[in-house]
Figure 1: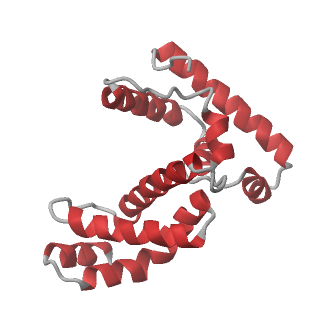
Figure 2 (figure 1 turned 120 degrees about the vertical axis):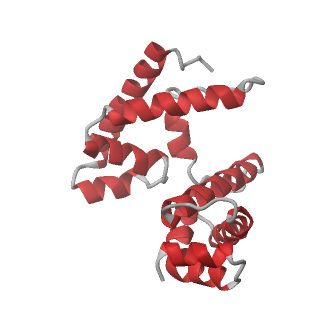
Amino acid sequence: MDDREIIELYWQRDEAAIAQTECKYGAFCLGAAMRLLSDGEDAKECVNEAFYQAWNLIPPERPEKLRPWLGRIVRNISVSLWRKNHRQKRYGGIEQALSELEEAVPSPIRVEREIESAELGRAMDSWLQGLAREDRVLFVRRYWHGIPLKELAEEAGVPPKKLAQKMYRLRQGLKAFLEKEGSYESN
């Protein structure tokens, strides 16, 4: 069943939409949650919550492509759960990847948070578009999908230390870009 047909099931409020979504994208969603959480039960909980949110959001939303739309939902739920668990010091998950980004990306805490977040998102999109495709994919896979550096190095056929240096240069480039754009504030 293609995405259009699955989305139509949601619009018809047919519960088969959830089963079809799970059949087609369950493994993808579980993999995305596992990379961030490293805990099978928590990952399954996030996937179930994502399917529940899909049921509640379609309609009125009508995503063109279901996979990236679900991926965003699963990632957001997983990051929220990771933060909750991290506060409780349960496990590390993507702590290393997020700590690497701390210097480059500000963490707005003021009332204008949504506005600043949108501006930061636009600035980061602009910076990413200026990168070579290989660097852009690498950066997104590391810091959006939370894929471990060692795994990325193996896939690229380079030593982890060399890739770590490249990631450091990319983060420094992001920081310089955000400072130039005025989207960076020291924490």
